[in-house]
Image (cartoon, rainbow, N blue to C red; front, side, top):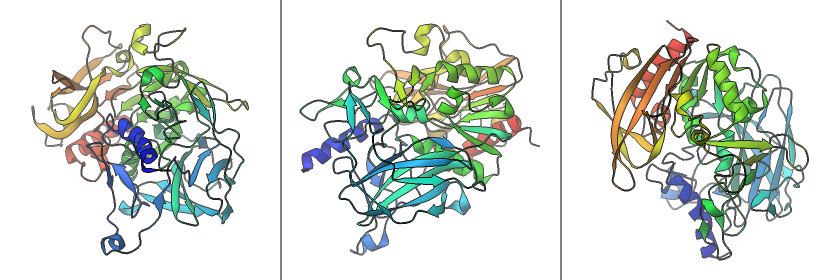
Length: 486
């Protein structure tokens, strides 16, 4: 368990952070030695622990995938009140552990609230992950704890925080949903989260749709990565998806201002478990790159009957994927994307003559190595009303991570009106001048479709150090119009 192995573990996480400068983001229950990725892609401590500053003993430490002090996953990504969710957890060395369950929200600025705590549980070392053709699965792990969701629990995004008796900590995210009507349905991008999951980041076994390891412990690229990944495994590192912070930023802001939200995951759209026509708008708050055919069909049908769509990131709906049952028969637990390898259909939506611009109004253009300002365009439009933004004004750092733009040679969706609300120059990794754009169009059904075209939009709503009042007001203008608020 030497330092070299630890460096291998960190390298996978850092490789992903390069393309998402906002990463996991701050979490309100983290203290002491906990870290997150800042906007330079570096791991930094989020909270300064006063006892550490005075030379005292710090709080819980983050479990890792080399030693696997405590790691786990949930049997379902989303459950309804009255249903149960099973947690499969490994603890090394075997010892007691507990599970604190938090709900993400504003909560007076705290960012989350503790909802319940498990009894003390007995931890065991689960069997090693199974691997086949770089697919890693832990579907054979024993059940460690069953949580019955009370009928009175609020729907929303939850995190189970696992802590061992000797002070190691990991996480398992899950969603509580139901079918009640609401103004807005928040769709959490669990399919994309899993595509990036490199568990276990141990320098040997783990694989995502982006990376794997060779026999020397070196990190390999997409050509040698997994074609199929499993939901039956923990998330790498601290146990949270690499892009989860975008969604949590939006949730804290939206709940602070009282928007009527329902919650679902992208696999709920895929499986038809939610009816998007029950909502005035669907909100996709974070990096949402991997879409199945049923997901796209469901969202297009929603737009065509008048449900508005809000995409608050970039590089949305880029890869086409398939979902399949696990070896035990549980539905939608295996995610496959061939990325131009082997037989089968092309993997990019734009390669099957269904470019993402035909839904979004813009589409992925490339990475943004360094943050650049978003340059306001058409400042007299109602989206920019009361923001104080003028034509050509620059909002610092709002073009970051990845960017979208309008492609003139690619077909647009049918629309009653269309406008670009930002046109922002930036330099790509080769120093070539490119530009980002933000789009809004109105479908023939009357639905609005907004695409921010940048990773930095959701963090500007509620991420400390990134909040921008103009973005907050513009987003409120958009959601208020969709919700038909005065």
